[in-house]
Length: 90
Image (cartoon, rainbow, N blue to C red; front, side):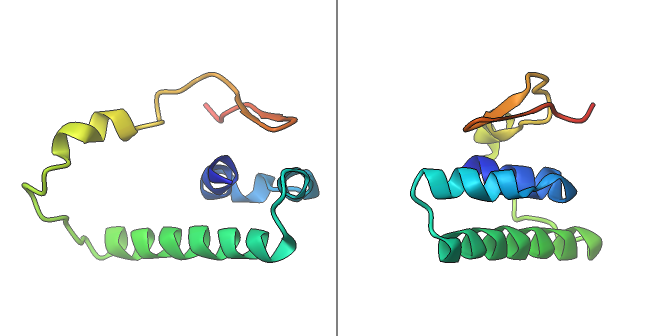
């Protein structure tokens, strides 16, 4: 589910029926898939609104030292989602 949400965020036009079928094969219902898409879309929308308006996060929230561990931008290996391999865009 998290890999699907990440792929939906980074490559929304690449989502195919295969992705939905893979989610179904591991127990997610159609209603779950709809919820995943809605939550990912809402989160992405809110981030883009905040970025577009120049909203800045408060500093000294205690998470700054964790930020380098959260970045996935430097990954170059293909991601594997169930049976679907996805090469990242370079």
